[in-house]
Amino acid sequence: MIDGNTRAIDAHLAEHDARIGTEEGERCNRQGCDGTMVFEDVEGCSCHINAPCHGHENQQIICDGCGYGPDDEPADDDRGDYLRDKAQDR
Image 1 (cartoon, helix red, strand yellow):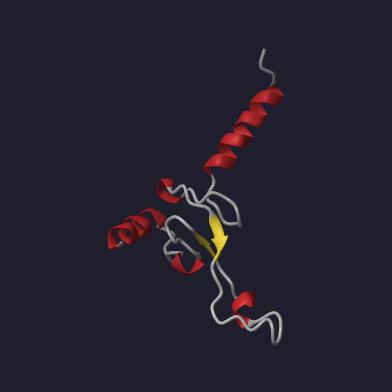
Image 2 (cartoon, helix red, strand yellow):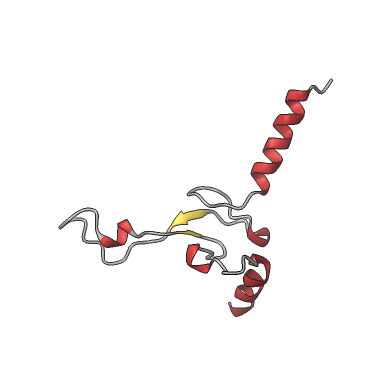
């Protein structure tokens, strides 16, 4: 017998699996991308001199699969066309 709680949990899990990743460790899910959202590598770190350095203060999160990041956010919010164009450029 399936009760309301089980259906609610199933619905929540399906929604969680389908959402677009925006935080570290989440699955990207953009156009079927199976990558994981990670913080980009910092170049020229000077934390050993004066922490936190500019690189770490401005570190952005990107997908390790498709490379999608906040700078790639299309102005017209048409992510589908943007990702198809980006995939063709590779």
